[in-house]
Length: 262
Image (cartoon, rainbow, N blue to C red; front, side):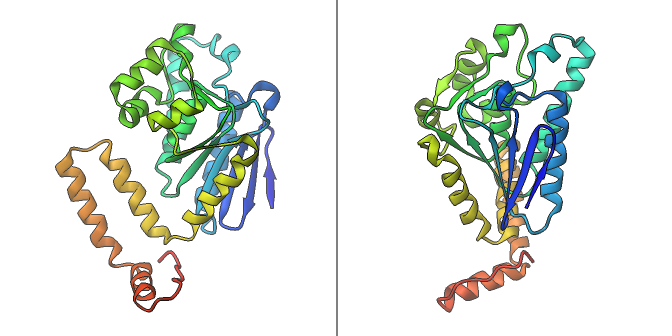
């Protein structure tokens, strides 16, 4: 089953939904229309209870997403630019805090907003020709869709400064070495690898996945003591779920668990 927008392809396979930025002739740039469609696609994915894991990728072999549409950006005044940044941040936060894991399958360029889109996904897999960068400074502005904030949390201030202040891209090997991605594979195997990750996550108890994403997100925002309290609370809450009882029973009985997301 698949659903087509003007700039995005939304497809479904079992418990996995794939969102493909479908503007390869424009390097899958994030025009205003594309951002609006991305929001709609993410909302559809979140609302569907049968979908447990999402994949975000770009059409074609050249780019995952080369960032925002510079021609559109050049026409914005200061207040319009602020509103545009807030819109992108809201959509990317929706991905990050959806309670369902998203996997960024990064093929080719992930620049500017494209890199920021990948950062909003908790798991990033890259093709061997992938390149990541925040080149906004070379055009006279700063990151707008959360790149500076997520990069500092993910890589530390030194690496984040290198990417944002110099604006030079890094290749897939460096991204792996820095911890920006979890795996690099040949481009022909990228979606296959992303789907393997997705299928594995889809086999896990959905509520435990949701709680784990929540405690990991909290860890980058809260103090250690606050994070520990939050973790203990969700650890306790997980023991009230049917899936926890099923998971432990299946382990003790040496059988495959059948999770229901309850």
